[in-house]
Length: 98
Image 1 (cartoon, one colour):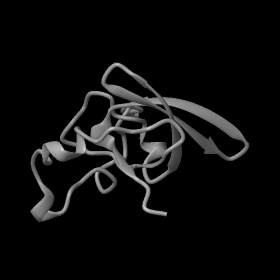
Image 2 (cartoon, one colour):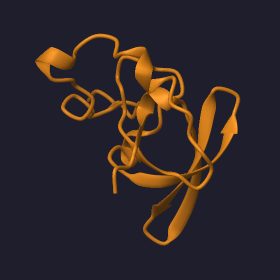
Image 3 (cartoon, one colour):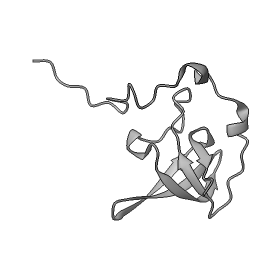
Image 4 (cartoon, helix red, strand yellow):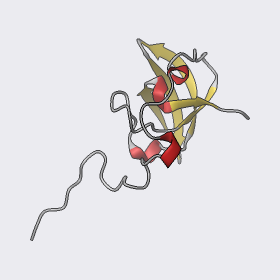
């Protein structure tokens, strides 16, 4: 038998694919957004950027930006009863409209 792969991006074929008109590198406007501490952000993984990409389990989650670490943003996310602190680059974040 062949051993099953358990990589970082396993079973993400549909999760990380972009729609036809969104393919390629996104605009630099997403990178230039300044996130303030206490601001709510949505985690939307951009598969064109591998650096600073969060794990697939955090795709679509909402968290609170708590600080900045170099070019990345420190985000607190609640997963069930646990609270996780993630370091995510701004390419994978969007400002929450609510």
